[in-house]
Length: 317
Image (cartoon, rainbow, N blue to C red):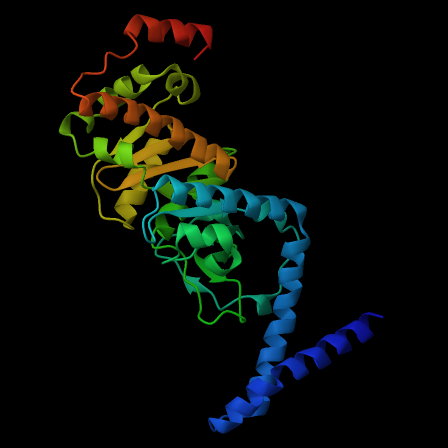
Protein backbone atom coordinates (compact mmCIF):
# COMPACT_ATOMS: atom_id res chain seq x y z
CA UNK A 1 0.00 0.00 0.00
CA UNK A 2 2.83 2.36 0.92
CA UNK A 3 4.63 1.61 -2.39
CA UNK A 4 1.43 2.20 -4.33
CA UNK A 5 0.92 5.54 -2.58
CA UNK A 6 4.53 6.51 -3.30
CA UNK A 7 4.12 5.60 -7.00
CA UNK A 8 0.89 7.58 -7.20
CA UNK A 9 2.63 10.62 -5.74
CA UNK A 10 5.50 10.32 -8.24
CA UNK A 11 3.16 10.00 -11.25
CA UNK A 12 1.03 12.89 -10.02
CA UNK A 13 4.12 15.03 -9.53
CA UNK A 14 5.40 14.23 -13.05
CA UNK A 15 2.07 15.20 -14.62
CA UNK A 16 2.00 18.46 -12.70
CA UNK A 17 5.56 19.26 -13.75
CA UNK A 18 5.25 18.51 -17.49
CA UNK A 19 4.35 22.10 -18.43
CA UNK A 20 7.43 23.26 -16.53
CA UNK A 21 9.60 20.77 -18.43
CA UNK A 22 8.36 22.13 -21.76
CA UNK A 23 9.26 25.62 -20.57
CA UNK A 24 12.73 24.44 -19.54
CA UNK A 25 13.29 22.88 -23.00
CA UNK A 26 12.16 26.12 -24.65
CA UNK A 27 14.78 27.95 -22.61
CA UNK A 28 17.47 25.45 -23.67
CA UNK A 29 17.75 23.72 -20.28
CA UNK A 30 17.90 20.03 -19.46
CA UNK A 31 14.29 19.07 -18.75
CA UNK A 32 15.09 15.67 -17.20
CA UNK A 33 17.48 17.22 -14.64
CA UNK A 34 14.87 19.83 -13.77
CA UNK A 35 12.15 17.21 -13.46
CA UNK A 36 14.17 14.80 -11.31
CA UNK A 37 15.50 17.49 -8.95
CA UNK A 38 12.05 19.01 -8.43
CA UNK A 39 10.39 15.63 -7.80
CA UNK A 40 13.02 14.60 -5.25
CA UNK A 41 12.90 17.90 -3.43
CA UNK A 42 9.12 18.01 -3.43
CA UNK A 43 8.64 14.45 -2.22
CA UNK A 44 11.25 14.71 0.53
CA UNK A 45 9.91 18.09 1.57
CA UNK A 46 6.39 16.66 1.63
CA UNK A 47 7.45 14.30 4.41
CA UNK A 48 8.59 17.18 6.59
CA UNK A 49 5.63 19.36 5.70
CA UNK A 50 3.20 16.54 6.45
CA UNK A 51 4.74 16.04 9.86
CA UNK A 52 4.39 19.73 10.65
CA UNK A 53 0.82 20.05 9.43
CA UNK A 54 -0.29 16.95 11.32
CA UNK A 55 1.35 17.96 14.61
CA UNK A 56 -1.36 19.48 16.82
CA UNK A 57 1.01 21.49 19.00
CA UNK A 58 2.70 22.95 15.91
CA UNK A 59 -0.75 23.97 14.64
CA UNK A 60 -1.37 25.79 17.94
CA UNK A 61 1.99 27.55 17.65
CA UNK A 62 1.13 28.72 14.14
CA UNK A 63 -2.29 29.93 15.33
CA UNK A 64 -0.56 31.80 18.17
CA UNK A 65 1.91 33.34 15.71
CA UNK A 66 -0.83 34.36 13.27
CA UNK A 67 -3.00 35.93 15.96
CA UNK A 68 -0.19 37.94 17.55
CA UNK A 69 1.43 39.15 14.33
CA UNK A 70 -2.01 40.30 13.20
CA UNK A 71 -2.49 42.25 16.44
CA UNK A 72 0.97 43.82 16.12
CA UNK A 73 0.00 45.08 12.67
CA UNK A 74 -3.42 46.31 13.79
CA UNK A 75 -1.83 48.17 16.72
CA UNK A 76 0.44 50.02 14.32
CA UNK A 77 3.52 48.52 15.96
CA UNK A 78 4.80 46.87 12.77
CA UNK A 79 5.24 49.42 10.01
CA UNK A 80 6.52 47.95 6.73
CA UNK A 81 8.77 45.01 7.72
CA UNK A 82 9.36 46.18 11.30
CA UNK A 83 9.58 43.60 14.06
CA UNK A 84 10.39 39.91 14.18
CA UNK A 85 9.45 36.82 16.14
CA UNK A 86 10.92 33.43 16.99
CA UNK A 87 9.75 30.21 18.66
CA UNK A 88 11.90 27.45 20.12
CA UNK A 89 10.14 24.35 18.77
CA UNK A 90 12.87 21.83 19.59
CA UNK A 91 10.53 19.79 21.78
CA UNK A 92 8.40 18.94 18.72
CA UNK A 93 11.24 17.08 17.00
CA UNK A 94 12.39 14.09 19.00
CA UNK A 95 13.36 11.95 16.00
CA UNK A 96 16.41 12.64 13.86
CA UNK A 97 15.56 14.70 10.79
CA UNK A 98 16.69 13.74 7.27
CA UNK A 99 19.53 15.87 5.87
CA UNK A 100 17.73 16.06 2.55
CA UNK A 101 15.04 18.28 4.06
CA UNK A 102 17.60 21.00 4.77
CA UNK A 103 20.04 23.30 3.06
CA UNK A 104 23.76 22.78 3.85
CA UNK A 105 25.01 24.08 7.19
CA UNK A 106 26.24 27.67 7.48
CA UNK A 107 28.69 28.83 10.18
CA UNK A 108 27.60 31.09 13.03
CA UNK A 109 29.88 33.89 14.25
CA UNK A 110 29.63 32.54 17.79
CA UNK A 111 28.62 29.24 19.35
CA UNK A 112 25.39 28.46 21.23
CA UNK A 113 26.11 25.22 23.14
CA UNK A 114 22.75 25.21 24.92
CA UNK A 115 21.02 25.23 21.54
CA UNK A 116 22.53 21.91 20.51
CA UNK A 117 20.32 20.42 17.74
CA UNK A 118 17.73 23.11 18.47
CA UNK A 119 14.86 23.81 16.09
CA UNK A 120 13.66 27.41 15.80
CA UNK A 121 10.75 28.91 13.91
CA UNK A 122 11.88 32.41 12.91
CA UNK A 123 10.28 35.20 10.91
CA UNK A 124 11.99 35.78 7.56
CA UNK A 125 13.96 38.91 6.85
CA UNK A 126 11.84 41.47 5.03
CA UNK A 127 8.59 39.78 6.04
CA UNK A 128 5.64 41.94 7.05
CA UNK A 129 3.65 41.16 10.18
CA UNK A 130 0.45 41.60 8.18
CA UNK A 131 1.66 38.89 5.78
CA UNK A 132 2.88 36.65 8.60
CA UNK A 133 -0.62 36.73 10.05
CA UNK A 134 -2.16 35.51 6.78
CA UNK A 135 0.59 33.29 5.36
CA UNK A 136 2.92 32.15 8.14
CA UNK A 137 4.51 29.33 6.10
CA UNK A 138 5.60 31.68 3.31
CA UNK A 139 7.09 34.19 5.77
CA UNK A 140 8.96 32.04 8.29
CA UNK A 141 12.13 29.94 8.35
CA UNK A 142 12.63 26.71 10.26
CA UNK A 143 16.20 26.71 11.52
CA UNK A 144 18.15 23.72 12.85
CA UNK A 145 21.45 24.13 14.74
CA UNK A 146 24.11 21.44 14.76
CA UNK A 147 25.10 19.36 17.79
CA UNK A 148 27.65 21.97 18.93
CA UNK A 149 25.47 25.00 18.26
CA UNK A 150 28.12 26.44 15.93
CA UNK A 151 26.34 26.06 12.59
CA UNK A 152 22.77 26.29 11.33
CA UNK A 153 20.81 25.03 8.40
CA UNK A 154 17.40 25.90 7.05
CA UNK A 155 14.48 23.68 6.08
CA UNK A 156 13.99 23.55 2.32
CA UNK A 157 10.86 25.10 0.85
CA UNK A 158 11.39 24.36 -2.86
CA UNK A 159 7.87 25.36 -3.86
CA UNK A 160 8.46 29.02 -2.92
CA UNK A 161 9.53 31.44 -5.67
CA UNK A 162 12.64 32.62 -3.81
CA UNK A 163 14.64 31.37 -0.79
CA UNK A 164 13.97 32.87 2.63
CA UNK A 165 16.55 34.21 5.06
CA UNK A 166 16.06 34.54 8.84
CA UNK A 167 15.39 37.96 10.35
CA UNK A 168 18.27 40.45 10.55
CA UNK A 169 17.91 40.24 14.35
CA UNK A 170 18.74 36.52 14.19
CA UNK A 171 21.86 36.90 16.42
CA UNK A 172 19.76 38.50 19.16
CA UNK A 173 17.13 35.75 18.95
CA UNK A 174 19.79 33.02 19.12
CA UNK A 175 21.47 34.67 22.11
CA UNK A 176 18.16 34.98 23.95
CA UNK A 177 17.11 31.37 23.35
CA UNK A 178 20.61 30.28 24.41
CA UNK A 179 20.23 32.19 27.69
CA UNK A 180 16.73 30.84 28.30
CA UNK A 181 17.86 27.24 27.74
CA UNK A 182 21.01 27.57 29.84
CA UNK A 183 19.03 29.05 32.75
CA UNK A 184 16.25 26.45 32.48
CA UNK A 185 13.70 29.19 31.84
CA UNK A 186 10.26 28.20 30.50
CA UNK A 187 9.90 30.96 27.89
CA UNK A 188 10.07 29.74 24.29
CA UNK A 189 8.95 32.81 22.35
CA UNK A 190 10.73 36.08 21.55
CA UNK A 191 8.76 39.01 20.11
CA UNK A 192 10.37 42.23 18.87
CA UNK A 193 8.12 45.12 17.84
CA UNK A 194 7.78 48.92 17.88
CA UNK A 195 5.08 50.00 20.38
CA UNK A 196 4.38 53.68 19.64
CA UNK A 197 4.04 54.99 23.18
CA UNK A 198 6.95 53.10 24.74
CA UNK A 199 9.15 54.05 21.80
CA UNK A 200 8.17 57.71 22.24
CA UNK A 201 9.30 57.63 25.87
CA UNK A 202 12.79 56.54 24.78
CA UNK A 203 13.12 59.89 22.99
CA UNK A 204 12.65 61.73 26.28
CA UNK A 205 15.97 61.87 28.14
CA UNK A 206 14.41 61.66 31.60
CA UNK A 207 12.93 58.23 30.76
CA UNK A 208 16.19 56.81 29.45
CA UNK A 209 16.76 55.87 33.07
CA UNK A 210 15.42 52.45 33.99
CA UNK A 211 14.32 53.33 37.52
CA UNK A 212 12.58 56.54 36.48
CA UNK A 213 10.89 54.80 33.57
CA UNK A 214 9.53 51.92 35.65
CA UNK A 215 8.31 54.10 38.51
CA UNK A 216 6.30 56.13 36.04
CA UNK A 217 4.88 53.12 34.19
CA UNK A 218 3.87 51.34 37.41
CA UNK A 219 2.13 54.47 38.67
CA UNK A 220 -0.16 54.83 35.65
CA UNK A 221 -2.36 51.78 36.37
CA UNK A 222 -2.41 48.89 38.87
CA UNK A 223 -2.25 46.24 36.13
CA UNK A 224 1.26 47.28 35.12
CA UNK A 225 2.69 46.57 38.56
CA UNK A 226 0.64 43.38 38.99
CA UNK A 227 1.51 41.84 35.61
CA UNK A 228 5.00 43.30 35.03
CA UNK A 229 6.22 43.65 38.62
CA UNK A 230 9.89 43.35 37.63
CA UNK A 231 9.49 46.30 35.25
CA UNK A 232 11.08 46.86 31.87
CA UNK A 233 14.81 46.64 31.20
CA UNK A 234 16.37 49.59 29.39
CA UNK A 235 19.17 49.26 26.81
CA UNK A 236 20.85 52.46 25.52
CA UNK A 237 20.96 52.85 21.75
CA UNK A 238 23.07 50.23 19.95
CA UNK A 239 23.28 49.22 16.29
CA UNK A 240 20.36 47.08 15.20
CA UNK A 241 21.23 43.44 14.54
CA UNK A 242 24.59 43.72 16.32
CA UNK A 243 26.02 41.23 18.79
CA UNK A 244 26.53 44.13 21.23
CA UNK A 245 22.78 44.70 21.21
CA UNK A 246 22.20 40.99 21.73
CA UNK A 247 24.62 40.87 24.69
CA UNK A 248 23.07 43.94 26.34
CA UNK A 249 19.60 42.46 25.89
CA UNK A 250 20.66 39.17 27.48
CA UNK A 251 21.89 40.98 30.58
CA UNK A 252 18.56 42.74 30.99
CA UNK A 253 16.49 39.60 30.36
CA UNK A 254 18.13 37.89 33.30
CA UNK A 255 15.81 39.96 35.52
CA UNK A 256 13.14 41.20 33.10
CA UNK A 257 10.76 39.75 30.54
CA UNK A 258 10.54 42.97 28.52
CA UNK A 259 13.41 45.12 27.27
CA UNK A 260 13.28 48.55 25.66
CA UNK A 261 15.84 49.34 22.98
CA UNK A 262 16.35 53.12 23.05
CA UNK A 263 14.93 54.86 19.96
CA UNK A 264 14.28 51.47 18.35
CA UNK A 265 11.57 49.35 19.96
CA UNK A 266 10.86 46.67 22.53
CA UNK A 267 11.43 42.96 22.95
CA UNK A 268 9.43 40.55 25.11
CA UNK A 269 9.65 36.86 25.97
CA UNK A 270 6.90 34.46 26.98
CA UNK A 271 5.74 30.85 26.99
CA UNK A 272 3.54 31.81 24.04
CA UNK A 273 3.43 34.73 21.62
CA UNK A 274 0.20 35.90 23.27
CA UNK A 275 1.91 35.98 26.67
CA UNK A 276 4.75 38.11 25.31
CA UNK A 277 2.24 40.38 23.56
CA UNK A 278 0.26 40.89 26.80
CA UNK A 279 3.35 42.19 28.58
CA UNK A 280 4.00 44.72 25.84
CA UNK A 281 0.33 45.71 25.66
CA UNK A 282 0.09 46.44 29.41
CA UNK A 283 3.30 48.50 29.42
CA UNK A 284 2.34 50.46 26.32
CA UNK A 285 -1.05 51.26 27.89
CA UNK A 286 0.74 52.88 30.84
CA UNK A 287 2.90 54.91 28.46
CA UNK A 288 -0.24 55.92 26.55
CA UNK A 289 -1.97 57.18 29.73
CA UNK A 290 1.07 59.27 30.63
CA UNK A 291 1.43 60.78 27.15
CA UNK A 292 -2.32 61.44 26.84
CA UNK A 293 -2.28 63.48 30.04
CA UNK A 294 0.76 65.38 28.77
CA UNK A 295 -0.86 66.10 25.42
CA UNK A 296 -3.93 67.44 27.24
CA UNK A 297 -1.68 69.88 29.08
CA UNK A 298 -1.64 68.12 32.43
CA UNK A 299 0.93 66.18 34.45
CA UNK A 300 -0.26 62.66 35.23
CA UNK A 301 -0.71 62.37 39.00
CA UNK A 302 -0.13 58.63 39.08
CA UNK A 303 -0.57 56.11 41.87
CA UNK A 304 1.42 57.08 44.96
CA UNK A 305 4.42 55.11 46.21
CA UNK A 306 2.45 54.12 49.32
CA UNK A 307 -0.41 52.79 47.21
CA UNK A 308 2.03 50.88 44.99
CA UNK A 309 3.60 49.31 48.10
CA UNK A 310 0.14 48.23 49.24
CA UNK A 311 -0.41 46.58 45.85
CA UNK A 312 2.87 44.72 46.20
CA UNK A 313 1.78 43.39 49.59
CA UNK A 314 -1.68 42.41 48.41
CA UNK A 315 -0.41 40.50 45.35
CA UNK A 316 2.77 39.26 47.04
CA UNK A 317 5.00 40.93 44.47
